[in-house]
Amino acid sequence: MRNVDCGFLSAVALAKAGRIGLLAAAVGVAAAAPKVVKEGPDEVVYLDGLADPNRWGPAECTLAPSRQLKASGRPTLHMHIPVDHKGGEKNYPIGWPRAYLKLRPAERSWGQFERFEFIIHAAMTRPKPPRQALSLQIQCPDRQRNNIRNLSEIRLGRWVRVSIPIREIKHIADVARLGLNISESNYRHGEKLDFRVGAFRLARAAEFALASLAVRSRVMYADRPTLKLELDVVGPPGKIGKGVGLSIQRGVDVVHRLTVPVRRGVQMVRIDLAAAKLPPGAYTAVAFAGDKRRERSAAFRLVESPWQEGRR
Image 1: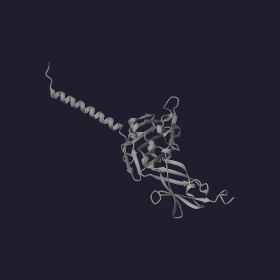
Image 2: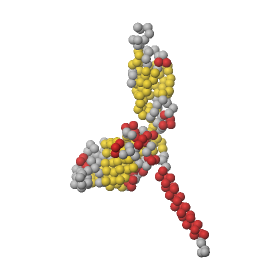
Image 3: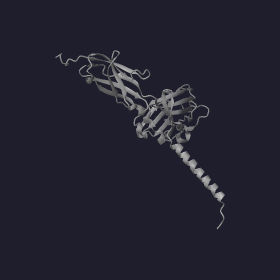
Image 4: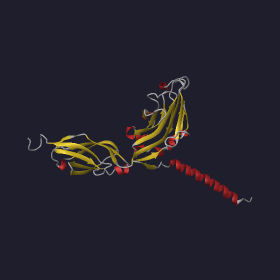
């Protein structure tokens, strides 16, 4: 039997273990969910991986990292499009330069947030962009459920923020792919376009609050007082579950208090006030009373009913 150098075997074993460790670490990083950070009044999750050109599948355009121009200093995707009305696909020489990206599982928790946002810069060999300069596709999960949005915010030579309310995206629970494309019919042959897109993020209010509060039944009969409120609820899911504290005030006096169960987003709630036995008069529904930053209010009135006892 040959003599085996134990030191050599140990070195080999350590090298293999090191490679396995690095691979495991890489897999762990790829699978880890992006961190939630606080920025001003918001909680945000940056999706910097969306700026990686290697994750996109381009057609009739080229993608690269943007080296000189960066969106708020974050990783930025550079999309270059030479408009060609004579080349492209055989059946569609005036086509749709495009690129698509598949979201990773850790990048799909859009339903826990209120806005999908990014910053975009445009440069073109023309004096101004067309009405439909660039389109964003949000596929949930594929082209059969495609949310297409014209990026009308685009301005030449300027960084602008695009902010898309999550509630406007249909089938958001199945979000799976993103796409960017132009229609060459909106441009002249030979024009060159450069879009730089970065600072991709999901955002929500850091604090449970109401973006708006409105009364949809401003006048009600006092014997049948069903208050209809339209609420736009924002904030982290865990805090929203506590419900909205609501007080009914007549002048400066609080005449009734209750907690209203809510969910995130715009919703209509109906509140039966019959048990409060409120007399006719002017009232105000106040949410988060006493909290200067979060307080919202809306007025309504109760009037005597023609069917009320004593008026028949």
